[in-house]
Amino acid sequence: MRTELGHINFPVIKAHVTAIHTVTDPEILHGQLLIAERLKIVVETNCSPPLAAVLKHPEVFTGQRVGVVLSGGNLDLQAHRWGTAG
Image (cartoon, rainbow, N blue to C red; front, side):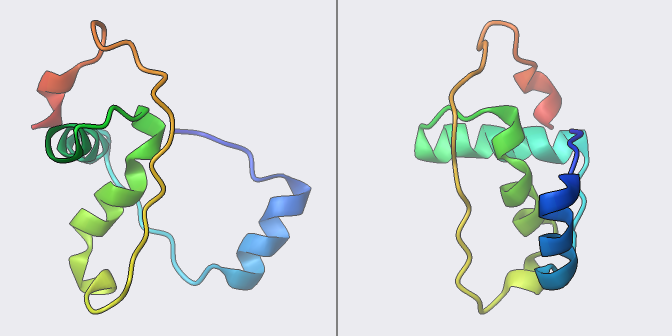
């Protein structure tokens, strides 16, 4: 996924963000599939990277209260590649 931070958001990120955790495409799809299987909620692929990061780096989040915002359902289920979620 690609986005531009812009002149408003980037200073906020510099001031308040202490870490950024990256995830791969298969990890993102795995998170999306897990949401669909466990919560029975269809979310956009762009929504699942935070869950994928929590799953990939549990040691960072252990013992903390973590919220993951789930949004959107703009997804073509017929065209989605669920099989690549591994």
